[in-house]
Image (cartoon, rainbow, N blue to C red; front, side, top):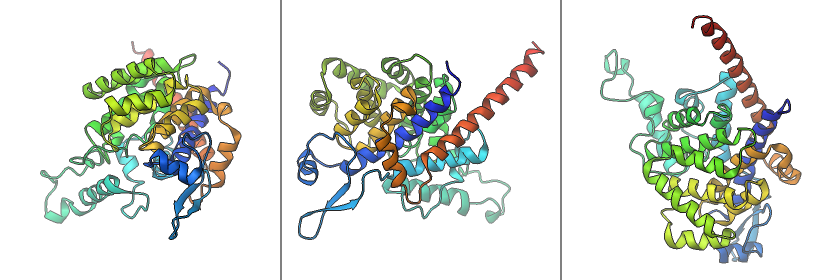
Length: 357
């Protein structure tokens, strides 16, 4: 492999995730009839502006194409933790980047932040005259206890997989632990599955089907059954519209179900044969939680193909629309340096202990 292969794939994964988010954001949760009314199309073929209806019921542009959502915001916070640490991170590192007044925290994510804040800041041992708190779990990886399944963890976890290239099992474990800061159980499991998929995409000469098989290997039992059923539908479908109709009829679960989101993200990747643009648009055109589905597909397809496979117009649109968010190129550079640091540490560890065998 050429020098710089991993650098290109990490940058591809970072931009791929943000672009999937930006392409899916304008049509998230919208039925096809409304998409046609607002945009004049039924199937998304390019990045769109964010359009709403004004007080007279007329289409009104709220934001230009390329604007990302909470999906990319929380992924950026995770990258920020990685940059500060200069290497692999855990739930505590991620939790330190979260703030209670974060304007991007919606619904269940807001519940998670409030719960984490209460555990970490209000229930302190010294405030109760104790040396420890036996009845309250104040560690960050207990923050998501008791919260319902949702897509907050799966949508932002892809950078973890970039730090474990070719090590999907380790990526799964790390992704699960970090996700537990905001969600646990099924949701954290599926975040680990996404991280394993990104790590598997960073294996030279791999392909979309191999990545899907790896993700299924680490999925919990119920999600494994859903992934298997999804792959059967993919094999019977000529394109996304055909798959979409069959999935809606047979497998639809819930808008915020992380198993559904990950399964459909994998379907988008397979129906696009792993190619970046085709796979990402497939993910968006499924509908429902389009930004979360496409940010997963985009990150994996970006990792699989590298930055050169991503259309320049989409990269520019995301960069131009970022406002207070950092450039994805800066986030990619931080993750890349963290990976270099980890590889240096691994070589030092190997040299030290090989002599003791």
